[in-house]
Length: 249
Ligand code: 13P
Image 1 (tube, rainbow, N blue to C red):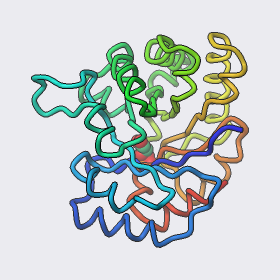
Image 2 (cartoon, helix red, strand yellow):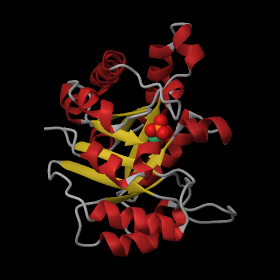
Image 3 (cartoon, rainbow, N blue to C red):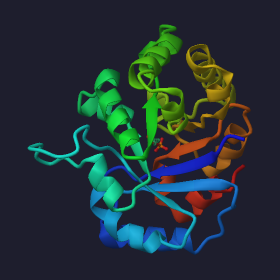
Image 4 (tube, protein in one colour):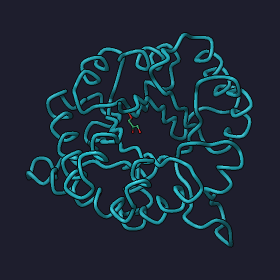
């Protein structure tokens, strides 16, 4: 059985008090046992939030990390440091990092390797732009992102990864991929993995959908056979919406 995962990517939102209030409201709610919920706040909140999450079923994620363990990289945070404060998941290769910080899949593959080395789980993001989709390049774009970012891993390492398909045109736009569009790409990602690693790996890897997921569309998306959960942006900043999405399986 593939793990069901819903991760909230808070991006660069919420100061300490606002973040604590949101987290308390989430923790006060009932979240179904069959979903692994992950909260990915800004780095600065991670250590304090870990204390609040102890003895709960929620896991902590970060939104990025550096590929080296330590060194003269001003402003950066390493996977080793994240591990030391109790982080379990690391979002890597988000389209906002690719667009605003010039990250590419090969560079991200070094981060993936380092995150795996420290026993953390990457949530590796892929997704096409609107232009790429209009020009029919979406399958090839995704295939190359998956190959260049993840196919350096061995089977066991890949099984520790989570993949998030986030079409760039659906992020923060209110325009969600239809369940058919999302399912088509998720099935394609699974097939691409099966061709390289075999069916056992492909069948057991969780593939999340991200891009304007809301309580009103989560059930339909999560009902698709190859969609194993969501990576949630805007709706993760509201406790009621986030919990409703977590309970949408
Ligand atoms: P929205 O849910 O706000 O569209 O953001 C999706 C996202 O980028 C999650 O990483």
